[in-house]
Image 1 (cartoon, rainbow, N blue to C red):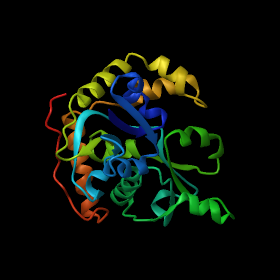
Image 2 (cartoon, helix red, strand yellow):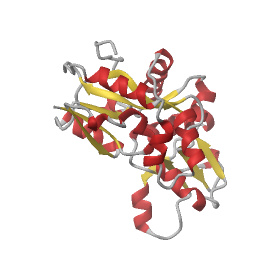
Image 3 (tube, one colour):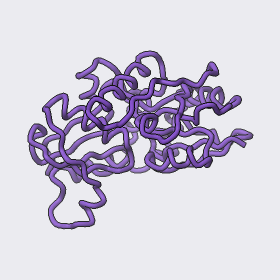
Length: 264
């Protein structure tokens, strides 16, 4: 039995829908920040993990090019909401579910405005009570669910759109990662086949999983906004992102790209 770990957000569904019905595959879902722990602890053979985890993991990993979650421009669901103009930000409350988005926030604000604001956990700001955060980074379904409550945040920035304007490249938030040296057998091919099959099933996925989403937005989000392939441009974007993170001291090391060897 092979165990696949992935996020439970709507954006992962085109990569994982139907996997649990396949013989020999078990699916576990959790928040992005927990997936690396599952992978390294042996709780999963492969994980749809934040790409920054490749650099920060205590053990060497490989990227399995069977699919990814990314965008080639705006994401709609990785956004900064601020009461103050972005060039003046000193503190941003960060959704802790994604390591990659927090790192991308620092890369983008440094490049655009020369700012390195302090990042504090959003949960800590909520627990402290008092006034709402001056600025907040939200990801995933939470952006859609919170949009009606963001009227007091006139300054907004979509991080995928900002990255595309800065680099001309797409951005990859999460990719299939595995422990280096592991033999995954036919699992990479099964994941790639699942991705291709689900690209034709977006309406069914939306009907089953887009709870709380306006239907037309969910269809456009999964069918047009997000990108699920991991080709040459996406791999180049990942390497550039890693390089910028290392240059800013966000990551201590800069491991070279290591791809899983089997062709998918």
